[in-house]
Length: 188
Image 1 (cartoon, one colour):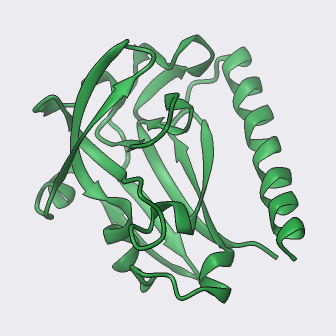
Image 2: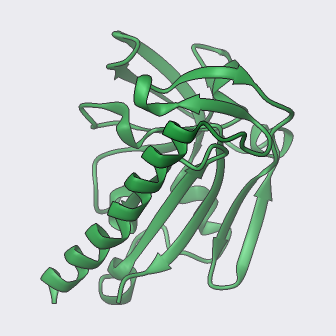
């Protein structure tokens, strides 16, 4: 059973990586936010128009978060080493688990069906990453996955209004700049 889930997540992840690489090579103009070059360390290529709200969806329910709405929620700060910047950085934002709780997901997965959940986080440029639900739940995993809206006490600037960041990762490959959408799905 575990093998099948792992393979399903891998098979789902692989097309996202290919799509992201293709999108970077063709340099499309995403809607809203920043055009990003993830192949070159995630540095911004040029500013785009204003970013759309962050949309989070799960089982037919969805919520949209604007910078103003996210600022009103309780914030957490994390300090992480950014391999690209070669420096420690302090991000502040809302733990992703708290935002998912507003759509009815439990903060503490109860095993079984809860552990079959995974999420796809996508930037405005189409760059996508996968997290298992257990990876974002503090009751299961030690890392903190944050929807950040400030970096070192200032707005994110070229990274868009929101950035997905996580503690405990050796490389920021699963951090998503200009975070536009998060979809929660169930592995079969």
